Amino acid sequence: MQTARSDPTFTPHQEGVTVSRFKLTRAAKGFIAAVIVGTTGLCVGLNPGLLGKLAPKASTSQTSNVPSVASLPGEGGGFPAVDGAPGCAELPEVRFYHWAWNAQMGLMHATGGKQATKGSAMCAHGVNLKLVREDNTDQMQNLMVGFGERLKKGESNPKEGAHFVAIMGDGSAVFMKGLNDKLGKLGPDYEAVVIGSAGYSRGEDKFMGPPAWRDNPQKARGGLVAGVLRDGDWNIAMKWLADNKIPNNPDESKYDPDALNWVNASDYVDAGQKYVSGFCTDLVNVRSGKKEKRCVDGVVTWTPGDVTVAENKGGLVSIVSTKEYRSQMPNVIIGNKKWMSEHRTLVVGMLSAIFESGDAIKQDDAALRRAAAVSAVVYGEKDAAYWYKYFTVQKERDKKGLEVELGGSSVNNLADNEQLFGLAPGSTNAFAATYTVFGNVVKSQYPELLSTYYPVDRVLDVSYVKDAAKTAARTSPDLAKFGGDQKVKQVVSSRSWDIQFQTGSAAFDKATAAELDQLTSDLVIASGTLVEIHGHTDALGNADANMRLSEERAFAVKKYLEARAPSSFPEGRVKVVAHGQTEPVSSNATAEGRAKNRRVVIVTGTTGS
Image (cartoon, rainbow, N blue to C red; front, side, top):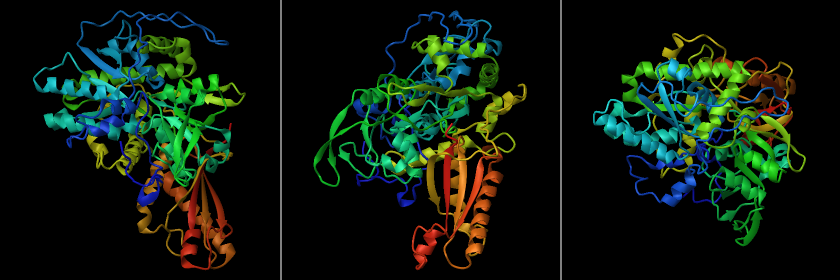
């Protein structure tokens, strides 16, 4: 697959493309292959070898054996045995295809086994749900298309194909384009839509590199990173690069000492193993034109890839992850519009069961342990103790003694869904921001494959969440919390934004509306970070007045963000820092230089704890 640019170094900010809105997909959660499936016929007859690079292969280690009961050191209790007997088999079967992903703990708990078990929330809501692991998103699309075709032929509840699939929200623009280009041929009523979310990745997906890269992002220039290219974890790195103004080199045959460079991995496990094994390759230096031997010194991966790196070699830390970009990777549930409209009660029941189980897991460790036991059975990989342990972020010492963070997911209840889709007072549609931000990435870098994608209102139906809310108990959402005295100690990104103000004023220029919208989306996605707004002016006029003006302008941005999306910018998240004319980045002797000095710099970061 060719990149969108012939220049071997692609800088995300070029030509009006702002890669603070980034991402396609992730390895086992990778679905850029979906881009190529449209009415344009771009994916018809696609090289299977290429698909293998873009979407992971299904696990060959799946088994129906129930894992033995195990306890974690220091933890009370074990893990319950999972009764695999269906509990409401007399009801019509509903098939749900998914990855192995801890964000689905609520789905696991609600179902109780591979198929809805006796006493499960699914059976209680009249849903005979069958869970099927499917790591290949190309196959997920085929299953949904096959389901739609049978529906079109008159089958009211097709016996084959997928009723539902779950993917990552940040790749849904790509996935839905490929899927609905096919389903749309059956008629608009047969298209697929997003209807809800079971959880989030909250740390497990990450960009790992040497500590020096974390401490000074510019030191990542010239690095060589292994990962599944054009997938979700790759996009975490891409967003980080853009926010720190570091070029990305998409040409795997070349080495650019001024950019971040890449080695493609077959899957997320292979990415970690390439680092562990000391994988090296010959690349052509774009400056000298000569081949050089370069070795992998960074990884993009997710659990258990990060665990593999830490336990078998060490030396890498989390540069940035979905702990900081906490709204980037919601699990999103996708179904067929026509079938769902004809089985509305069943769909609402399924979501209600997932939301109730999400609440149970949040409130009761025993519920989390049960969900972990079900996960081990359904995924056919690892044991319950593993899924339980890495559901939360773990701080551990790696093989070289570095403290690293591994794992991290969360479950969603009804209130979380209302926040995600902008249904709660004070919320913004974070899914829409994620969908658009990362859809634009594919569009900017691969215009030959994705010249456009569907508007978010065509692929999102929040009515099922609204219906679930009519009878559900009201619980609290999981929102990032910030203390009033917290300060950025570990910088994640620092970037100037082209926010224009009226001359000598803190009033926004009308031309800056689009930039403010983009800034809002960027920071909504990075909702796990503290935000500092640094105001700067040129040197014209009085220095004291310029100091006040820079503060007023920074406060104007702060007020805009807090008014636009209150729940994403709670008290304590955003700080204002005034610099006046004290930190010029260019000469104040020219109009061009003064324009560069009049700027707003957005710094995101964490407390470092």
